[in-house]
Amino acid sequence: MSQGKAQPAYATLANDLRQRIATGKYPPGAMIPSEATLMAEFGVARGTVRQALAELEREGLVVSQMGRGRRVQGEATPETQPSTRYEDVANQLRAAIKAGEFPPDSRLPGEPVLAGRFGTARITVRKALELLQQEGLIVVVASKGRFVATKPPPPDTNSEG
Image (tube, rainbow, N blue to C red; front, side):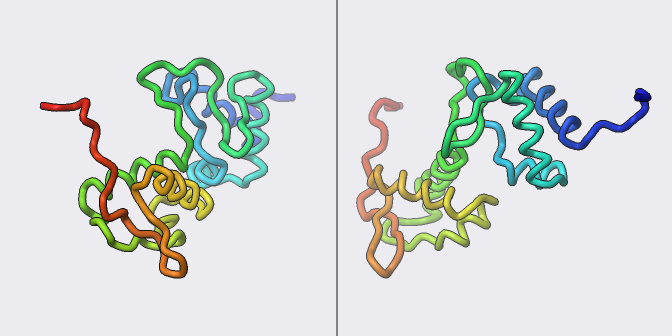
C-alpha cells in the first residue's frame, strides 16, 4: 500500500479523538460527546462514529457505560466533574431557574422545545427534568406540564459572604 492513500473516515475521527484525550480536552473521567454531536461536528455517519469509538474502546482509552455514553478511561481529577449530557442539561436548567428565566409557578417549555434549545434528544431532556423533579425544583401537574416549584429548595448555606 502506498503511504499517500487517504485514511478511512473512522480512522481520522479516532485520531482526532485520541489527540483530544492526549491533550486533556477530554480528561480522564470526562464524558465523550454523544454520537449525534460527533456526527454533526465531523460531518460523518453514525457508523463512522461508532467504528472510531469502538477502536478507542479496544485500545482501552474509553469505556462504554450502558445508558450513559462513553467516558475517558481513568480516574477523574477533582476539577473534572464527570457528568452525562442529561446532567449538563439539568445544570443549565437549574441555572436558568435560579437566574429567574423560569420564575416560581411558571410552566416550563415542553421536551421538544428544550431539546432544540440544548441541541439534544428528548430522552436526555426528560432525564434532566426527572432529576430536577427529584430535587424538588420542578413539579409535574397531570395533563398540564412541568412547573417550577413554588418554593424552590433552600440555597446552599455553606457560602455565606
